[in-house]
Image 1 (cartoon, rainbow, N blue to C red):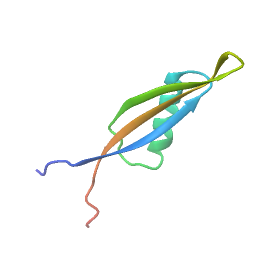
Image 2 (image 1 turned 60 degrees about the vertical axis):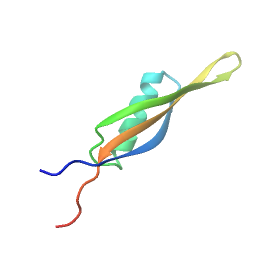
Image 3 (image 1 turned 60 degrees about the horizontal axis):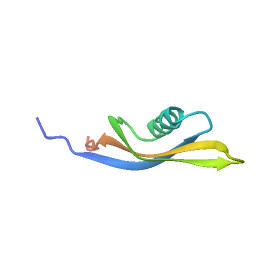
Length: 72
């Protein structure tokens, strides 16, 4: 059995609803183009203020996934 090697990619997600929604949306979107995402780590949380209120939330996260052998 070979050791697994992982790669990670930094992505950002935003939501007008919540931080949780921003994370879920970012992971869902990344999963449509990156196979086998196994974990995520939030590295930054920030938001945008509009007229004294929270306009939207934004999160930066890293997603991790195993590198697979493409040889047949």
